[in-house]
Length: 301
Image (cartoon, rainbow, N blue to C red; front, side, top):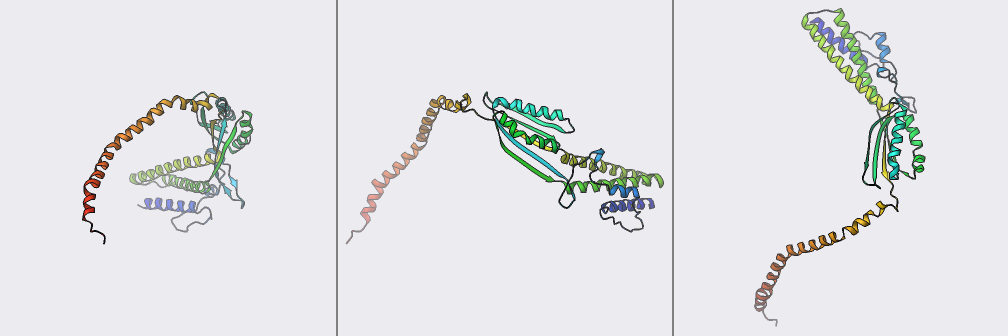
């Protein structure tokens, strides 16, 4: 029983110590041991140190505090139909040439509706520097193929609080893991206490793995911005596709005429019974009811 109480008190002390690492204040409960110098050093480590050696590109604000911003960019191009596939393929090749550490293609598709109509889309994740270089030359690239940029959009999501909170929770769980391992090594107990301690250690290990994955994903969003490129057809006024609507209209002339006549016939067929009924009611009113009403009116003096 003493071993179980010591384990709970140690766990509580470690969690409180790690959560208060930002102001370096710790509780003074007798059952709570102060953090070791190694734990203090780990708790005060800069946020730029990422999981598995990954380095996060953080942005300092005006006050000097570190911010973690995830950017998403989208751009639309209207270019001739014959240039859509080569242009998109050139963008894919440029991304692949940069390497997976700099740029990764996450999705791409191309739809050809006719000889004069097509559309495509490309989604990639890349470093902010690569995307800035890409966006700086996209207008000149569109003009080179007699196209244009139709829209540009950039959105930013502040992940600073989420990353700092997840990092603090991860450090707290790591400290708790180390203390539980020390308890297992230094304070042997009965079988039930050992099994309970091992279950707690397994739970902490699972929490550490989950927080590590979440933190890595958040930092990846900061390191690799998202870019979406849309490609649509720029129609040539003299192309066959530009005259296609007019040709379709002439080709459907008799069909549309027949449809209009059919609509008139249908409306007449639906309204004819009502016309007969209304006519009958008017005849009864004018021939039978109205004369009687007139005869009953007193003569005017």
